[in-house]
Length: 273
Image (cartoon, rainbow, N blue to C red):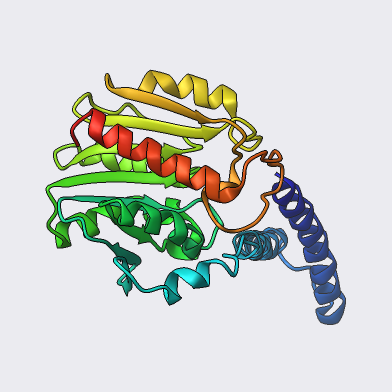
């Protein structure tokens, strides 16, 4: 919200400067410029300020921490491969795959440890790399993954804003997507009953809007489960440090991610996904 106020203030300043500039032009040319010149200069400059503010906003992001590098270095049953627009985290499983949408302004790589834990348990994962770290710019990115790879079962998942994108994509592809897993998120449109839903959030999460979360339950399908991780918060689903406005977790990040994986495995087993 503070960026909105900054943009409005900047635009007001720019409009003021436009009148100053045209005043200077008038003195130099000894001729009053048309009034429309004031408006044109103000609009163009205002748009430039808004665009600049936007790019500053998306440029300030949460970076993956050093522990993520260990996922690349480790060998074993899971292979991490960079593909077009995503990372493929390939384990020993062959039937089930999960496409994951990262949270807004968070490095995609931050979720590699969580994805690796899932792949070790038999669920291959595709971790998306959205433009400018904003899933809203490519909400149907999972469709390209689904079209290219052959799995019997497809799950879509996402963290925070990424979960909204995942649910939206699942609703539009309910003929191939059988499950949605939301981490500290909620669907902003109704999900059909042939899709099962799992919602997971931490008890200490202070970022998730609870009012919006509760209202969104009207969009849940018939098969919908909720898991509250006691002591967990918003940020510990990923490896990117503390998040502004979040609550203080009383369990470790490793514990929160292990509980998340266990909940997803129980969900898949319960609904035979």
